[in-house]
Image 1 (cartoon, rainbow, N blue to C red):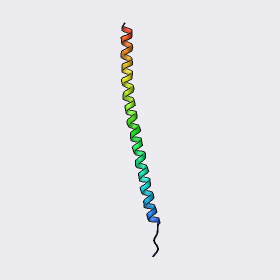
Image 2 (spheres, rainbow, N blue to C red):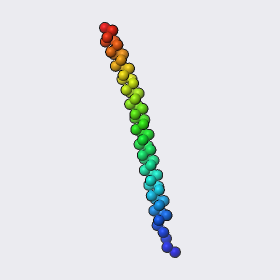
Image 3 (cartoon, rainbow, N blue to C red):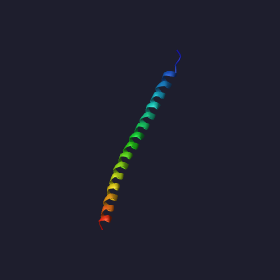
Image 4 (cartoon, helix red, strand yellow):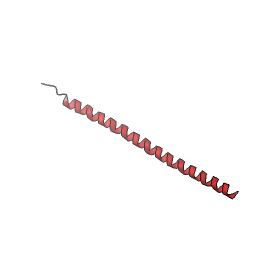
Length: 59
């Protein structure tokens, strides 16, 4: 009876691929969250600039 390593190797390879996929997915979610934060920060900054320009022009 010969023990085959192929099923074990295949299982380990699938587990490694799943691990990489999870890592990539988490990274993509982090990037998406950062973009959302950047968008909100940009909007707030744009509003502040607009208000400041309006106040300056009113003087």
